[in-house]
Amino acid sequence: MKKAIFLDRDGTLNVEKEYLYQEKDLEFEKGTVEALSILKDLGYLLIVVTNQSGIARQYYTEEDLKHFHQAFQKKLSVFGLKIDKFYYCPHHLEQGIGKYKIDCSCRKPKPGMLEQGISEFDIDRKSSYMVGDTYADVQAGIAAGVSPILVRTGHGKREEEKLQEGEAKVFDNLLAFAQDRKQRESL
Image 1 (cartoon, helix red, strand yellow):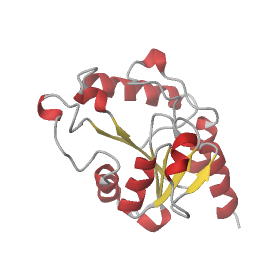
Image 2: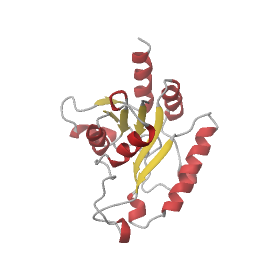
Image 3: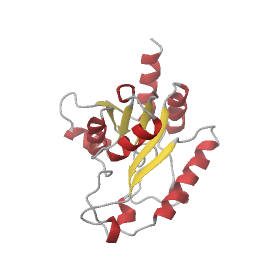
């Protein structure tokens, strides 16, 4: 079995920008590249799980999102890095239009995207993590049986108030989490 870091995208890996889908607007959070490098060196699969209600609202298409993720990979490849898989939820029950207006199992806080990754990559839940900047990310991690991590980037500082005692570990950013993993795994 493999170990993985499930990563929220917006506000965790890249700077939070509402309904981000254009390459020109992609800006990594400070320390993202170094963090991903550390986690990859520790043997983790890097799997993005991202709610993309902009598709459901018809702000952009699934094809637009695929092009954006290709650009994301290209930007990381300069540093010898790549995301092992991008999973996305294009649905929104209230704001969705047409086929996207459904109550799905993939929209976080539901664990559908994580479950898909766990199944596809034969992932060991006990040695894996869900890292994100919202309480929905934490809840998805808990529901999937992986360790939830909240980062204070993006919406994280505000969302931290929603945490119950001991519900998730909190770090200033993805790099702080990666450095903590490196330190703990070297003991």
